[in-house]
Length: 287
Ligand code: AMP
Image (tube, rainbow, N blue to C red; front, side, top):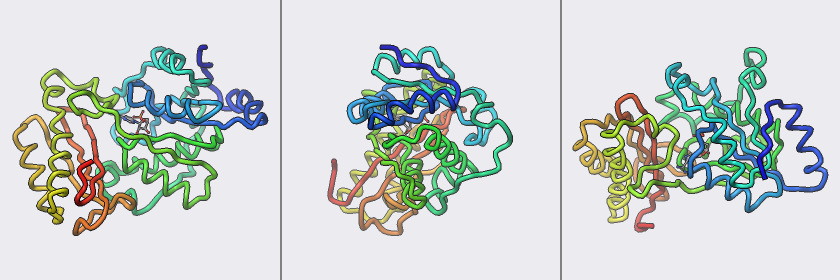
């Protein structure tokens, strides 16, 4: 069955109404399109757990802080629609910008602290744009469950905190990162990498694994873990590290000592492409 492509908010609300009345569980997978197997995992999970699955495809202008990044973000709606149809999605919601932002947006949703470091520090306004558009999508779709990837761990933690603090009646379902066989996390931005950049990109994941090994072996000083991992990345002049941080897995605040579960997170530029990745680590655990 083909997924139904919907462009307008009122049309989507009208189409979802009978399913809601029937007591169906509605699942939402928010995306910016250019769908790949990482998105596919979120969709499959939603399909398993929900009666009705909505995938939103919207390149959200207010979360980009660089015009060029927004302009060159891949847009492949036709392929995305087929991708969703092949996975049994019921509705693909792909609103034009004029539908989501008919007039300049004056109301915003902001989560403090969790958004302070990592990407929040490097991309001012980014998370405010994300939490605002996700709130709009939640209000439009009113899903019971929404699916987010651990690939964007700070985004996931931010959404979880937003839903908890604002009493949004939605279950946030985290989905593990899907990787290429060589370890590179799948991302729509990987299509921008040239051959050489693509060849060295898996070093990001290897640096995270190296950090995990150091932590598992008992090194609890984040500075020492960081130095070890950065040594590995220094071998690749093509990789410009933007940040490499060890943060509390819940609050996303840098830790002074590794005493509980942490996320090790990296952002780096390969040429003009910015990639991010992260892994979860706990002292004494290698899995
Ligand atoms: P995006 O289209 O990049 O905004 O991503 C939409 C959703 O897919 C977000 O919740 C991402 O975290 C998730 N996602 C993107 N890449 C991956 C991946 N490699 N593995 C798992 N989830 C992913």
